[in-house]
Figure 1 (cartoon, rainbow, N blue to C red):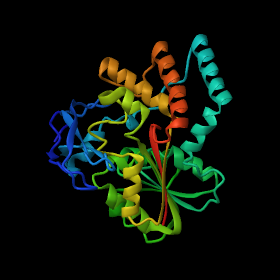
Figure 2 (tube, rainbow, N blue to C red):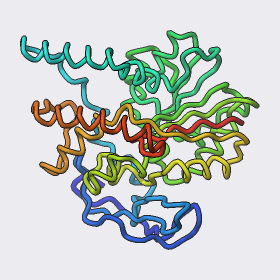
Figure 3 (cartoon, rainbow, N blue to C red):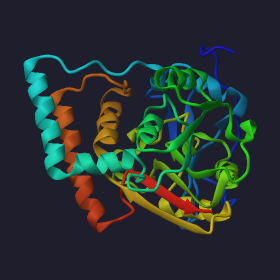
Length: 325
């Protein structure tokens, strides 16, 4: 099969968490970030406590690698900022982030709140090109990665000399009770069986070990504002999307005895920037140069999101899941 052919799909009419029949939320969705063919629709669980979102129909598991063939993670990093005016704007922007404290908050999220934690053994599930793993290694952690994307795994090995396991987490069969911390940043929404993934993470954690995960939040201000154009939907790669409540329930069902789920708005600007592009052009290209007006609008949305989050703690763009075995 080539990317010019449609991805094979399977019907998913019911919520995998509570079994309720889903209601149509969005139809005629396309891949706005890459070149995956097909038209997609998203269902929502009608149960008030649940509210899970998912694709129906959903790509068959055997075809999932095809939807990443031209994904932005295979692209080189954006070029450096050039030109005096752009460099001044770049410096001013970063000065603003430092002054407001937003830069530090983003760094905490990027490190998944592990700064100041006693280092131990850490596995990053879906480690990508290894940039985050390399950062943790400099903090004293003994790190390993897992990745299903062979291109990303090879980049992590070549660039940072990291140990990266290639294949699904369940297939690489890591030993029981191996890691002090398992991390997942924007991974759980990509997998066909999130419950099985959490159970496998729990198995390989030591007693008292922690699982920390970040994923888009369907209750976010951005989803409310941008609807079908919200960057967090990302069909067809985002198979399931969670609220803090559904993510918390999933952790309990996976067997974790201590589960805390919160949300954060510190990256609202980036989701707003992409969502505004999608609303305007139907597409978003990673690393593409944004016009000044769009950058200003997305930055204003960032500070609005922070203000709303002070009053409504479930409104952040991302859920932060923290569970103890």
